[in-house]
Image 1 (cartoon, one colour):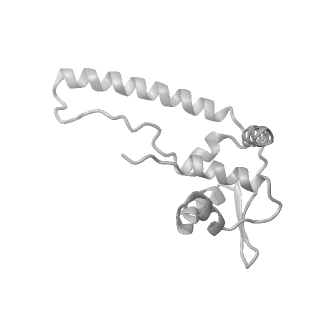
Image 2 (spheres, one colour):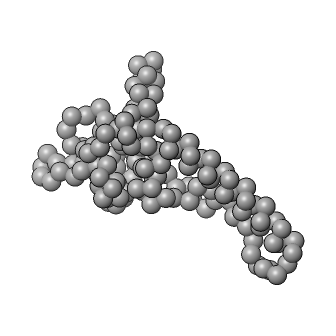
Image 3 (cartoon, rainbow, N blue to C red):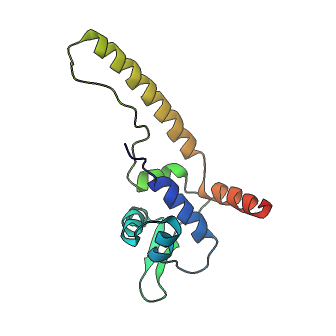
Amino acid sequence: MRIDSRLSRVLHIILHMAREDKPMNSEHFAKMLGTNSAVIRRTMAGLREAGYLASVRGQKGGWQIACDLNTVTLLDIYQAVGKPTVFCIGFDNNNPDCVVEKAVNAAIREALQASEALLLKRFSEITLSELSEDFIERYAAY
């Protein structure tokens, strides 16, 4: 199963945009992340619809932040990019009447649900401004 990196990529883009006073275009981000600009635009569209980003048309257009980084959390961004699957671990359901399979699936399902709830709770506690501050500190020490 492929790793879904939309969340980390979007957060990467947002941190770059937070340091710029002008719109930045999809081509710039595509080159930076080694992907296609259409992929960037498609991913950013959810953030625009949620009101976190704005798109500016024209030759000097592009994407810019349209929200207060102090109030938007990683959970907000996670939801805006479509709530990617958190874990790629799953369970077998080839024999749904098998009591062993039912016990195994119940245990796995419970553990995954608890883990996902914990992760999403932590996402809700981290604001984009905190993430940006961490980046600035790391960059200064670099």
